[in-house]
Length: 103
Image (cartoon, rainbow, N blue to C red; front, side, top):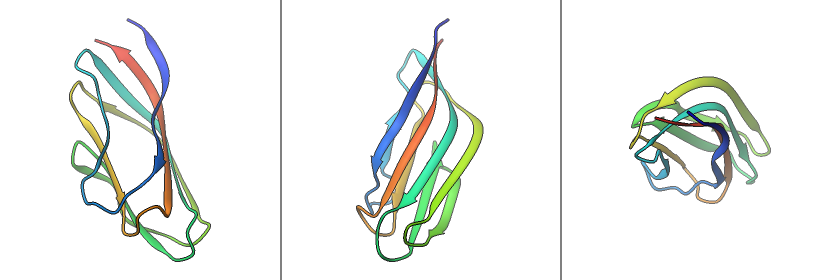
């Protein structure tokens, strides 16, 4: 079984509720180990992150220039998704890192 460090998502968040930013491939498992959210906008922004539609970060208000970090160990099975969005499009960057494992 190969364990490969991986960027599970790296990019700006949109403002559409329940946007899927990554889905575990059919023959894999993901372990989310680090999450970083950064507001590079000029106003406060609400941010949301869900693992398979279960809230991990809910209505976290990021002030302009603020960064939120979370070290965790959350397992996502094959076919499960990471959902993420913000109240303002193109104001928050998300970096989600972890490990991809073969099943």
